[in-house]
Length: 221
Image 1 (tube, rainbow, N blue to C red):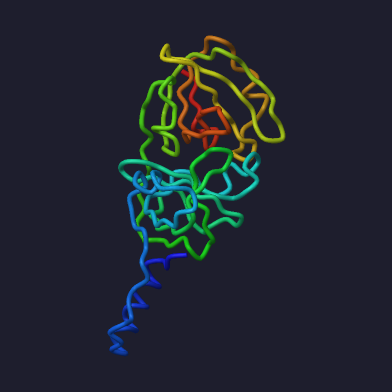
Image 2: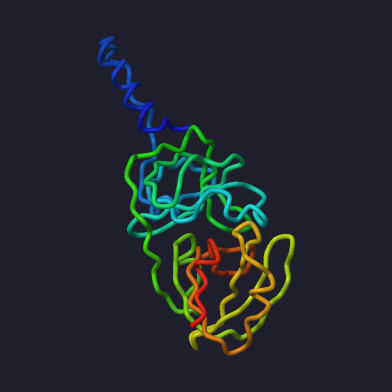
């Protein structure tokens, strides 16, 4: 696995001190998130971005404790068995293996491969149409607004489902139980009510959906 930035710097420094001309920094794949997403499964990648979804938010359905990051052009989910010590908005560098989790594009990483870069800035969700949630925006923090077309479906212990449409196409909303959503509050929503929802553009198998991070991401209009 490629070395994190801090270890790469140490490696190069030792080479300079010892004067070993054959000593070289290990080759890495250092790309934007968009470029990393285009590589083949199994590729070792290093990506940088700000945390858009906190560690463990989706644990009830994904059975892991990962988080999501975004840069100016794209976003991606970081799959982890152990939660990293990062918070919303933290800028991080992640090195890991590109792959898929139930067809969601992910980077699988260990805690030691998540490096904080010491800069915090909130990720701004991109407003998009309900019919535009697809592979092109998967992994990004988005905001959709639409009328409820299908009401509450209980998918416990994983989460709860609703569907909304702004006229451009229906999209499923998936409310992870681990994100703190109350079933009774979601059951009270009725067909035709207008909702504004911020969440990760997610994919589970063949279904694209928007996954809010907390009850604050759901606004009844």
